Image 1: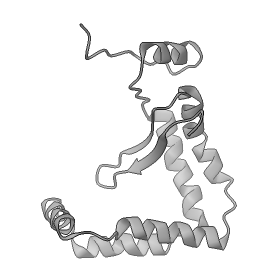
Image 2: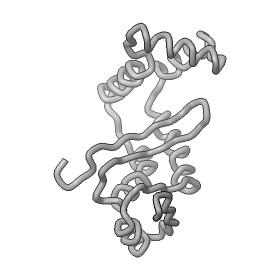
Image 3: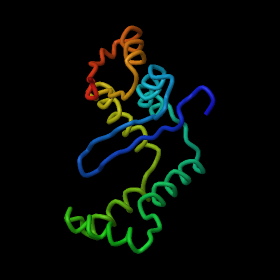
Image 4: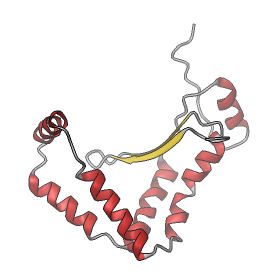
Length: 149
């Protein structure tokens, strides 16, 4: 992408409760962090059409119950066995996804507000990028240099 990150994502681990935003090869560190921090307000003000809500639900179900080749099915079954995830647990998650309404997006904004207030910002980048971000924001990132000479 010209002038922006090569990609971005967010991920929630329902087993640990950890939520993370991520971007990679991102030349706009501060504006990306500001965009992430703006997500709760965005969700609070979201006016979602029925079509957009249906697409979001279909996308979530597609991610949750995605097609898997035999090796991936085996790995998933093994992981569920180790984590004691029962078929009833998975069905409850499906039911929760399928019953999602607009209010859930606004409710999720409150969780993301907690991420914004209590989360950590981690950057793998050059000294110059981290120094520039620290001098132009209140992030106060601590540099860790594990590959130091």
